[in-house]
Length: 300
Image 1 (tube, rainbow, N blue to C red):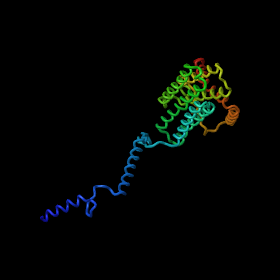
Image 2 (cartoon, rainbow, N blue to C red):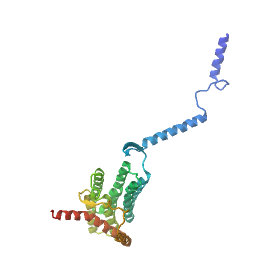
Image 3 (cartoon, one colour):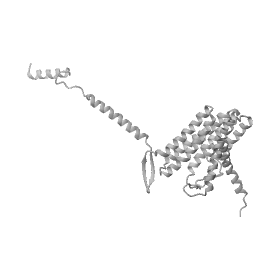
């Protein structure tokens, strides 16, 4: 056998026995490198997921158009709390806890009033926050009051009950949609149509009051039917309601104003459900009353 043949034989023998010294294993990474590669792949997937789910919003700052990533936590935290209160009201109503459901709607109302003010005070307004607030309002002041009223007493009326409940929900959705497209084009001193939080407060206070007095007669069922239907129709009407947005808490006020606020707290604490019903009932009635007075007023 020639020298070349012997060398070729040894080379083929080395390849057929990879465990022998001098053998070259297949192209595999050592264990440590494999783990690092796996971790890197997971990080890349996580980064890609965060990038795809990130909120990117165009905004104007100092006259320049910029692309802003992420959302503001503080105002959206209030909005989320209001959304939770609305959802809790629905669950409480289904479980027959109507007092808790009504209170949850009022808590959602307070939180909804805070998120916008907090955003303006901290300069954290955003389009995302406005849209999120509108969707949360649909749950807290659209779905929740209608479902609570329906599960308490409207379902006893049959088909008419759920039709009126749906009418309220649809009117709330239309009211919120119209409000969103009219921002910046109407006088901030007035709301066009009954605000959805006030409509929800009227329905919640009615449920709270009548349920506390065990009012389940047929007359109260018809009354709740009228209240829910009227609140829904007033939301989509063109009747103006005072917005109280011109009231500045930073300006000095007469002493009698603080005294009136103290008396209001005392009266509400005595019988919360009745006083809240009277308060929001008066506000709901103020729109049609002022509209009639303006039409009856002689023109010069």
